[in-house]
Image 1 (tube, rainbow, N blue to C red):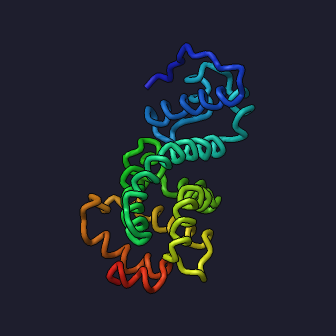
Image 2: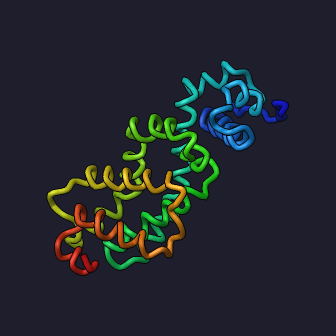
Image 3: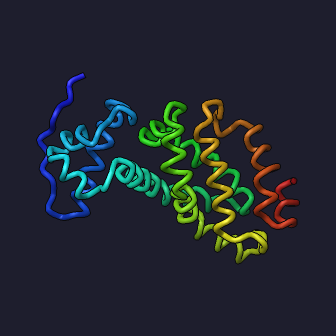
Length: 210
């Protein structure tokens, strides 16, 4: 497939210029796949030189990481609205995790990165770098604070520890192609039985039926 160039013009505003480059990256990732996309492809799509792309993003991994952050944060407000419709923190954790996994797997960029053929890339960019844990803490911090105020979170677990645990489970589930619909009772039982006890208080666990 021939690489093609668009007629876009890069903004003089640095933040907007970064957004334009990331938008170009999304296009070529979906067109060629993550593994086959080069920085030159992204530069051509953005109608700039390759050194210009490197001026805004030090390397390819930095660009992909920035794109993951943008896509993740776009989901946060919607996800928190969904979580706050649940009465207890236990419900928020189980239902929220399933919700985030489902919308994450439907996101074209996330799906490309966490597909089986790109798991090494996902591990390096999202897992080993701590990006997944940082984004998870950003997403869950307000919800955790509210749950702690209600006495539903274990006092011997820090927010960082809880978010690391949630991030690990989320990464595993996003990458599993056999993880089905959000209505599958087996998934809820698994998360309720194995994830919640390390996070919620015994009283909250009892209310959740653990």
